[in-house]
Image (tube, rainbow, N blue to C red; front, side, top):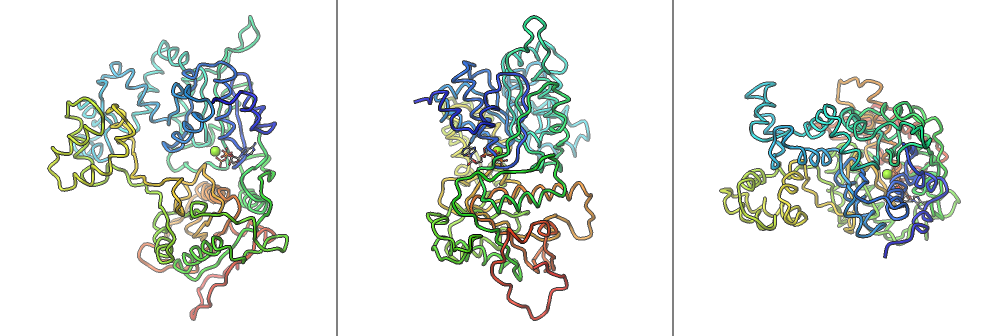
Length: 554
Ligand code: ATP
Ligand code: MG
């Protein structure tokens, strides 16, 4: 049964409720990690649909990753029921695909246009130089960047089309707005008019853009994102309602205090205070561990998981007592190991394997990079069969002369199953970079993921490994990063710390195997900003015969 509107807003605190209930017009929700931004956004959309009578088809919600979009769609379905099917929950790229499919004739594509992956684009570039776009079009293909750029050009040159889409989605919301890039921003500006006051009624038209984010979690600058768009929202949409949320429901108080201390030196937020409001009954200090090398660090991780699961009482709390009830009932999927680069996962996986701890690593390999998948998908563009995608994939596999066809078939089946009869949808998702993703948040395994991939997620126990100068901030030997890049690394560190609910462990190693050589490493300078009052040292590094050159903080 669909919950009543009252119960929908009941699940929010007063500030969140005020934000969710803003009647109309542009709305900016600026708030730190764990303050319920995503929750407020989903409740706001659900409230509009179930309580305000806004047709679900008029709501467009944009998030940054396919996974986040899928999660939001799932949450919305739980809140609004079957009407959720009419909501549009998209990433910028999937939104672009949708607009281009609808308007294909205007840009000289067929309705079945394909999305060229990087290799195809590179081949065409090598062959045709910067003329290559023509070649793409001649083959009825677009590239990844085209997916947002082309809709922007199309809309910018056609007012009636702008009106068409504005009428279709008067209600637009964007989560993680701090990571918007210029083209995405331009698309939003086209889709969402700045309000003009209607002189007759004195109120602006119904609808509006809601953006939600945290400038201190902007971590995609290297990909062209610009937090400046977030910061100037008030100028772009004069009179926008602004709501701040200050209660953090996720993390224990020491974790939260440490995270705020870590971000404070370069915070982009005027008032970066966060009140711990979670249901925590006990507040663990942040565990600091100094290991000899990456293998010892990995053993620390597996040992600690074992201890927390076994209930061995080793972890002292600020009250002087020892972890008891607070950590009971943990299971493997309550643990996450976060790292800056995926090459760091190796040592951790080895240690967990040795300890018999089940884990899952979030893979970032694209399906199309796996042998056979490309050939099979190419074949798939040619099969004229009707019916389910699964059946068509099977048929296509028969035609693929490739010993890899079997593996490809296996890899593609979950995606094919999800798409029913929608071959175009299946092919675009594949081209949009669908990953070999077996990561399942419900599986009872320890999660291993990069800091970037951890955005928006939360775990009762988080290990942030490799807190070393050179990894956090990331620096290649001999490279002098610019200060902005270092600030972004600090934000990444902040994102990582704030994933933790009950326990956070920050570890660093004196030496580490990196790019084939053993290198000494100093602790991350970010650690020095965390007050000793919220941390405790856990485990001692076994003294080494030869002392590492660097001074250690611990
Ligand atoms: P991030 O910046 O990391 O994306 P966020 O601001 O989007 O964080 P959410 O993920 O929406 O935060 O919420 C964090 C946690 O707090 C979730 O477990 C959520 O269910 C819980 N939470 C949020 N608001 C409330 C509330 N009013 N009462 C109880 N729990 C809440
Ligand atoms: Mg969120």
